[in-house]
Image (tube, rainbow, N blue to C red; front, top):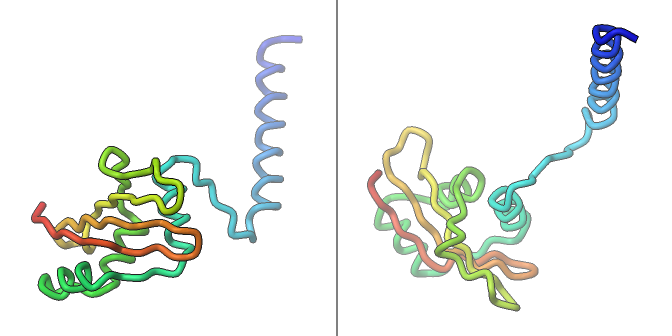
Length: 128
């Protein structure tokens, strides 16, 4: 069999496989969270969120609301070098991200990730 025929068969099977995958996974809410940051943010986002008084006061001083925390938890970056993931009970993660899309401020939060709740321990607002 010639090389061009092999490539044609391979590409044909590949395209059919992609179409079948799109058919089966198209209507479902399937996601591919492979990176550690994506898995951590998804895990925190699924839990009940509690905001400490200290973090809430920082948000109030900077004229922010809880939607800023929601935005950071959906689009932010987990700083594993500043996080404490060696704990047995509740791991503490440092997460940093833009406050809003067209805002030059960066919000850094410390989140304690327990089994049922995710508690925002502290918040820090920096200019980018």
